[in-house]
Amino acid sequence: MSAPVVRGISSMATRQVLAELVDGFAQQSGIHVAIESVGGVDAAKRVQAGEAFDVVILASDAIARLLAAGHLLPGSQVDWVQSGVAVAVPAGAPLPDLRTEDAVRQAVLAAPSISLSTGPSGVALSQLFARWGIADQIAPRMVQAPPGVPVGALVALGEVALGFQQLSELLHVPGIAIAGPLPAAIQITTTFSAGVGAQSPQTDAARALLAYLASPQAADAKRRQGMAPV
Image (cartoon, rainbow, N blue to C red):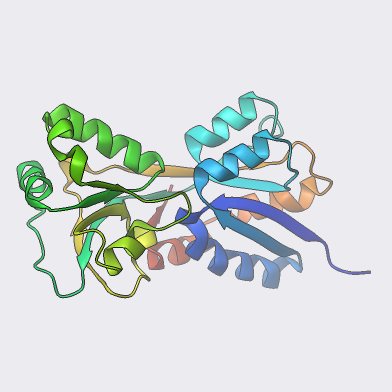
């Protein structure tokens, strides 16, 4: 009898850490996991449209909405990792000063082009720019990364001078330099959660995966991928 396969969908932000963790889970449990990583907005839409997955792994607010709408099993939400935002520039470009909130604001105002993700961090940054009173001023210089396309890829191509995205998504992108994280005063931390699909025929295996993702033995992999345990 073949080993069970747990099928899941996740946002791009957790792609690298999940690749590492599902291997460890498979070795420990004998359960194979196949996770498809796409843009978070697209992932949520597919689940909302009725596509069946054993596990769904997205930002915690998106998981909560899917749970409330009946797409995930009640009580199955597990918060398992957190991720902060970093800033990238093309390789070889001068690194901006990011030590204070005002320094970041000046770097944004000076940049000829800026890009944010389509995920929760991008929404929060847009709100920050509005609070700073510069949203209209920089609007002509904003470059929207399509869902599923990393901001870092646009930075590497030279299409964007200053890119904001979760550190985990910037770590492995060639052709960029990571200038550093946002300072604590304006850091945007996203909690990622997972839930068991309401139509899953493998709820026990799915719950076992979620427990592994949240377990202490997963902590080192999270840190290696620029993230932090919850």
